[in-house]
Image (cartoon, rainbow, N blue to C red; front, side):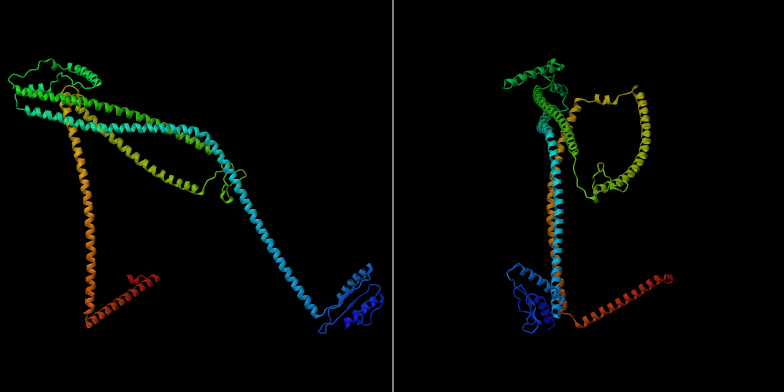
Length: 569
């Protein structure tokens, strides 16, 4: 009622100049006419409490009415500010203030969260930008490097193609020469077998002569001379004309060779007192021997030609190998030069700060042009290699000392051997002077002592050695085959023994199972009780023994703790 009276009085006083106002505020709700008055009317709600005052402005249609209304609003706001608030209004104001504070805090949190998210996104984009810029720059540098390498490789490509073509040609030539040598070797092997057959035929002819003219025959010496004599014979003409020309040349050579033989000038006749039939058979054997000698000579010529071709191919192979070595060395030098040129190209390497260990006076220098990029693993390997080289140096020094001692010992032995050799040479000289009156060249004597019979015996020895080598190879093959059979049989026998062993073990298991079943079926309870008592007594004795041993060990441990050794004395 005080607020109504105050409000009514104030409004009545304010509106008095405009046409009158109420006395106690009850009739303050009236509107003054003519000047544009404002009135505040208070109403009661359904609960009887005063409601919020409302301001009604009436305008007379002039601009002054609007000004009066604004002035009334200001006056009303000042008046309402001067009027004390009720508890409900204060609670409502506090509630609205808290609600607004909470909304403001939420808005500030959202703003801060959005700003943080924006900053994080911006930082992530900045990092990604830096990374992309680094990748792009590295790709550009790599592209530049590849371009430089491509230009360099194009410059070296022509020389490399020439070297590869030269090496391919030499490799093809070496393959052809190798095939020729292989063919010559195969031909020589075949020719050697044929030559052995011819030698065997000639040996058979000699055996026939020995059978015709035994050692006890009184005419063996003249008949042997007749048998071994070289005579001029007409060569068999070949069917082809070229072959006949070659045979004529061979005849001329043979005539020249035969002309050197003094036996051809002698007149051949049957020895006096010799049987004419025996003489004719000796002549037939001689014809056969001469046929075999001619065949061997012709075959030897062919064999010599094959050997000559093989030697020429071997020489050519040697030249080709030398050319290949030269080309390979040239190719290696070319590759080294190309690699050196490629190594001259600058390469950019991205490093992190923790990877740089190049400090001068405790600081990273501004100029890193003289630094070296090296991996930690290689550096550790080189350090280990230094230690290994030190160990190897010590070992080599020890070996050098041992070799020096061995060298000194060998020098002493050499001087002793030289003194012994000089002593033996002086003795040999004295013996030769006493026996022969001069010094004899033993090597010359050995060379002069060789004869045709010796050569024949050596040839027979080589033939027999080849035959024995073939027989040995055959026997080795047979032994290897028998060894394989023995291995297979041994494996089969082992499998059988394993099977027998498994079956024996299974039988023993069955027998033990059967015996245990019989024992369990036919066991005597009294005997079983006695066995249990005995086993229990044994276990009790074992437990007592273990307890005594434990007590002894505890006593030893306590004595060791006290360092008392009287119990061991």
